[in-house]
Length: 352
Ligand code: UT7
Image (cartoon, rainbow, N blue to C red; front, side, top):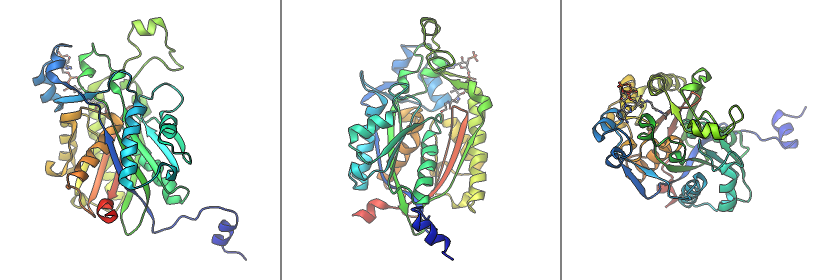
């Protein structure tokens, strides 16, 4: 009788290789030039630098220029990630753009990136999972890579949140910023790469963070615009509670599932929404803040872009070393949460 492997080979099915994990082979980021400081926001809404810094840790954020859309930011980050990986666009099998702010309802921002990048052999789709989108994208890429179906998946977190923020609502407009981060995900061996990913959702909390109008439930109309229903709305306190729980407990669950403990963690990269959430999660995990990567002070909450931006910055600064265990934790609209644990592969040193 034919072996199962031979049968699968005959019928063109792909055999996963047990020693292969999905790892990051290239990183790239992009932020627009325009900086909006807290002092400038003081002139726009009833707020103060002191309130923003003490309640969120944010000092400034970037804003997309006129005419700059999410796919423009994504394309810049993608080009840099490909250069970092030493790959040509034609070598990419799949492009996932995780975003809450696509250029339009459809087509997907990923298809615009695919075309402008010249990734002629790639499939492309957008992924909507709130600020958790980058980790969801990483997990999807992991599935394709570990199954052997694809070799190079480009995962991009990109946002122009400034376009859906209500600049008259001080509860939200001080929090968000624009930016993009991209990662090329492919097979790695030798114990490197994604050890574990865990995705979670609690859709019952969807109303706590949403854009009410502009979809099929409440289509855009003169009334929805007059009522400002096409802007993001948030119940900050509820999201805050969910975030601390999701990042803290979710991380502990994921570590246990991976057979690791907090002592094995070299760096925590939390979604960058609020320094108080980050500190509370670190405390819950009993991790010192020296092991926590933070960029919320300079970029605000860039949603799906925040984790790849923080990762790329720390790697470029030489903080993250070969073999480091990196714990990434995110939460966001949905409500969703996710945790990814990765053993870092210093691909830049190895590519030299
Ligand atoms: O990526 C996921 C997206 N979202 C988040 O992660 C956000 C999670 N939540 C948060 O980060 C925090 O809840 C906020 C930063 C949004 C708010 O901080 P808070 O400590 O939870 O403040 P609060 O909502 O309890 O509001 C306290 C006060 C309120 O005044 P009253 O009702 O006590 O008189 C607000 O009106 O602060 C007021 N306030 C402000 N004051 C000055 C809210 N925003 C501002 C502001 N400037 N920008």
